[in-house]
Length: 504
Image (cartoon, rainbow, N blue to C red; front, side):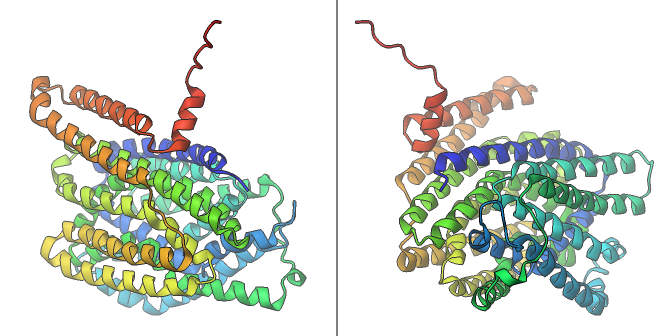
């Protein structure tokens, strides 16, 4: 079984792909998107994507989760005994159900947005196509992850789609194409990503989409179907943030959804390490659960949770101490600065989710996975109620607060259950150390803003760069000197020049 070092190396490769996407996304979102599109148009594209991601998650029928959990049972050297064929077929059934539901309820869906968001209602007919593309982009990406190949799919999702969209933004902003063609190109970028992921999966090797009906006995088939359908019912847990833009579009209009979208993108950077570390660690933990090796599960869970907290806290702190500079540089920044506290609240929610979501994975991989349905129902009901209640009181901030509060309540209950019933604890001394370091980083940023930044005058960017370098250097030194993570310290030690042996 791969150790944490192997997982870390794979995760770093995936994270590099993610951060390449973040760099492109930063330039695209803050210096192209906000210049070429109005806030209403930004909100329209965000709501379309969020709706497609939500519906595609439901249309998966739990296939991605079951593929991760049951792949160890199908894996046999270079053979996979048709598991990828089932992984492609089941979502097709789910998509057919979604398409029929969309046709039946399309008028009601249009009616929910036509008053506050008329622009969105004009393009809802493209939602099934976008949902299909998003569905199979994720399916093929998950298939690659169980083969421990995540770098290329991450490049496609984080870099490829953003580059495709960048071309569409520039063409529309320059007046070369109209808004209708822009929306088609925007949706088509996800179709191209789907095809690229499929091509890569086939090139990886050891992949066959031929279904071997004789391999599955009745009991195993029953377990897979039962688990997949169960995961369909629990899929809303990972998609609570998607509900926010849908609520905002219906209640406050696409302009508010556009402001929220920019704030959401900034906060979403906090979760980037989770996308790679989570993707590579889930199959390993699923194997340990299958082997009934709960000591290994606990060790991996603490390591994953700790490293998620380290990286998410570092990123959040660096974003927060530079947020005023970021909005000042942003085209139409005064309009989007209304999302300042949205970034803070969503960033904290991302820290909580990325640091502790491994507990939900462990529960879902275990025999007690039906219990997670109760937690999901609690989370979903709480998120819907808080969104409906707080948006009317705090507007944009209310939606972000709803996400944070619902996540905190959910994980408190979940972590207690996993600790008591499965004997898996995620907390360690390193996490407490990291939170102390994060508080000091934020304090350094505040001190700099109050007393040092005025000395730079109009050289705002120079001040931000110096502040970032200072705070980052402190964080790196503190994590290493305080031995927050043995894995991180070992990786640093291996790259430091070795001290010469003393001469005898």
